[in-house]
Image (cartoon, rainbow, N blue to C red; front, side):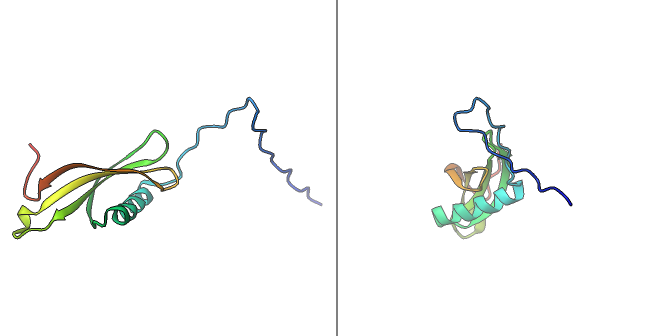
Length: 109
């Protein structure tokens, strides 16, 4: 007969043992997907492209999202914007801010 595994008990809350730093299980692709969806809900703008993603110290991700803020004819004169969308390790929105605006035909110097 095999023995049942012993239950693992959490340390008491007043214990001097510190839990290990939590590691994000959110993959970059999932973070991008969540950031785009949350961005659209919050701003009402449809993401055009993702131009960057980087890990945050808290286990979340910071995603750069480009959008068309003002469509014009010709397209090269449309006003674009880059937003930074921060999501935590669980994929929840932490922050969202516009970093810059530019015309679609503009290049960085």
